Structures are given as structure tokens and as C-alpha cells.
Amino acid sequence: EVQLVESGGGLVQPGGSLRLSCAASGFTFTRYWMNWVRQAPGKGPEWVANIKEDGSDKYYVDSVKGRFTISRDNAKNSLYLQMNSLRADDTAVYYCARGEGAVWGQGTLVTVSS
Amino acid sequence: DVVMTQSPLSLPVTLGQPASISCRSSQSLVYSDGNTYLHWFQQRPGQSPRRLIYKVSDRDSGVPDRFSGSGSGTDFTLKISRVEAEDLGVYYCMQGTHWPKTFGQGTKLEIK
Image 1: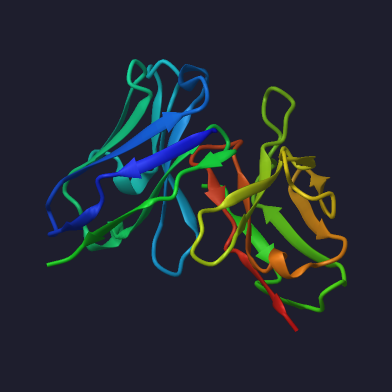
Image 2: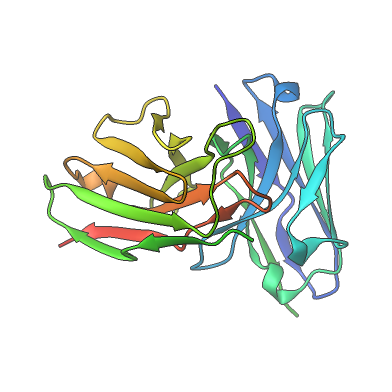
């Protein structure tokens, strides 16, 4: 079964850091671009970052550039998102997604609040 | 960024009747490889988004054939031939041609 499972969310104070993980299974991880997509409460999804199959290319939405870093470990079939200098408007459910959104995880909630 | 504009934002429907959602992009979505990366997603309450249609008109595996997509360039449409109760939720179009990938505002399909 094709599956993506996110972890690492939680409550963090403004200015803090968090590292999200996504464990992939049931498909050949190295064949796909991987993505992080977030959805703030009551809002539509927002594509945050993506990374090429071999990790050589990465793209970020402007609002997270310089603060978030996407990475992957193909030996572990895992995707990561290091989030620094977190702000209240980063509060959202963060999803891991494969390729052009064919497969999504269940999401992990990140809440930035004092 | 490419702006995706959906209409209507709310769509009251009668079960068994057809439904149609429009999506317009602020730029052409034709990529240099000739493909148009316009996709449609369904999100039921409390669930992750689920892709229904990719590259304008291709149905994902397991998606009922009452869902269909059409369009070209900057104008696209999702149609449901006969709405069923399980179709209720929010529908999003999304473009993957230009970075950053962007979604429409969403169309809430609800019972009339």
C-alpha cells in the first residue's frame, strides 16, 4: 500500500524551530519529486516546498525562504522539513505529498503560539 | 505568482443532478513540454486532499467516471454528471506548471 506518514508537529513559541518528517512506503521513493504542502485553519492548501528525486533541486514559496529547509534521505525513504524562526502565520496542518499531488499523508499540525 | 480563480465558491446541488466548477488561471498553464499541469482535488471534512483529475482531464485511479475535467490554456472545468452524497466537500483546482504551485480558493459543494 502506498503510504505517507508525517510526524513532528506540535506547539512551538514564535521564533522557535521544529523538524517535520515524512516516512514513505509502498512505492519507489527515488522516482518522485516530493513536497510539503500546508493548510491553515479554514483556508485552502498552500504549496510550501519541493525537492527533486536526488535532492539536487529545491524550491520554496517566498514566505518561507530563508527560514525553512526541505531535505530527503533516499536510503531511509524519508522527507524532512526543518522550520526555523516560526511565526504565528505558519500555523497549519503540514502535509507531505508525492509528485503532482497523487498521494498525500494524513498531515501533522503545527501551532505557533505563545 | 499564478492566481487561480474558481467559481462559484459555493455550489448548492440536488443529489442526482449535475454540477460544474470553473477555474481560470492568470497565465497560460501550458508547460514547455506541451503538457498542461492543471489538477483537481476533493477535500472531505477532516480529510486530506485527494486528487481526482490530473493534467486537465485524466482521472486518477479509483475515481468514479461521473467526474470529468476539460479545458485548455487558462480556462478549465470540473464536471460531476450526477452528484452523490459522498461527493460533498470542497473542490480545489491547482496549477503545477509555474512555481510556486498554486491552488484556487475552493468551491464548497453542499446539498440544496
